[in-house]
Length: 497
Image 1: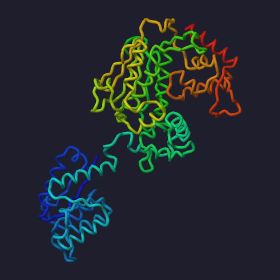
Image 2 (image 1 turned 180 degrees about the vertical axis):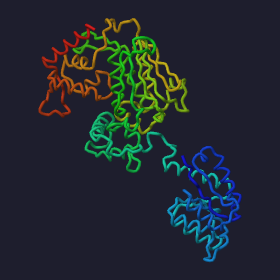
Image 3 (image 1 turned 180 degrees about the horizontal axis):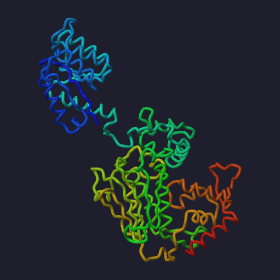
Image 4 (image 1 turned 90 degrees about the vertical axis):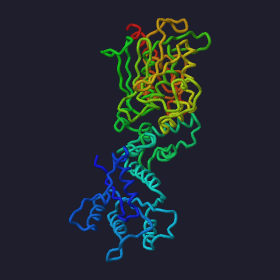
């Protein structure tokens, strides 16, 4: 990258020490010297050119004008103007970015023409005052960091709050935002009305940088998030052994919004792990028990998606082995947390706060830092060892599987597809999508569940209980005779594997 050339104004002896301090600092600081190259008149070697020509040519060539205004006005030319005013006037005419620093708190003792120049500068832009070289260096540093932020050359705030390069509101899906409002109102009492516009939602969630969507907006509601943030996909692999080995029996790369990739990755794991179906002694609904509680699987995956480092080129990886589930994300614990503290009650410290808030509103995560504690408790209740956590080239959660045992005294069954699980649940009674989602162990209605229901409807395996009002909030789905036959056929096929 070509350095940003800074013209440091004023050839007055008054500022000789300050100019030297600025030059040395800008060339010595690791961040400043990467982006800036200062120009000082006294650094120009002797040449057969008039001084006025030299400094005015440098003003024309510079990328940024930095003016130092003190007590003295300096020598005046035939028009009664000092080099400092000439420089400022030319920088203004050429529309150069200008940073003005005024020495002293008061201007009473300054030369009248300097007072007039300070007033002129003050009417056009913001000035900063300083009393010493140290204060000047500090003020210039802060101003130049702001320049770098404005030009998007550095980022000091969270990644998810930065404007997404090249993305516009047109790259966001209005239907996804409308569904989010409905879900957030139902789950958390979200205050926006259901007919709120997409722009109102984005403003409410602080997902706009002026008129541009920030990275979190693209991750949450983008039509094609991976077009802008390639590594936001989630890679899932199922190995029959204890270590990664090729060929991989089952491998999927899931793309879409953060909601989509979480739902798809959770479905991937639940479709591969063992489950048992109990008896209807206690109720008409036969209980379904997974070897790893669905809430634990969901918590591990959603945490990886919510808290990962999105500046990394790595993707979240979900790996299911014969003895364990591993969820890896390119990230690390925040400085306030350690692996030991993670297992204790702790506050929520989201790495991506603007991404985490909508996930909380849709009930994918909890705000108060209770997720890890819930995972540990649910594993204990399921008779599993506590999950382990490690920081090694990323953050890894490992959940052990039940090996060589049965669940609730029932024989282990082969993992069932989502289609089989939905048909099985509807075998007993009609259910809404939210009821299906809950019994499947999901925190919200997933895109995959919507897709399966649409397919079952199209093939007449299920039917609506209120067919004339397909979008009714009371809508449920019941199994047809064709659906019963389909379920029996699918079960026979899976048992024959």
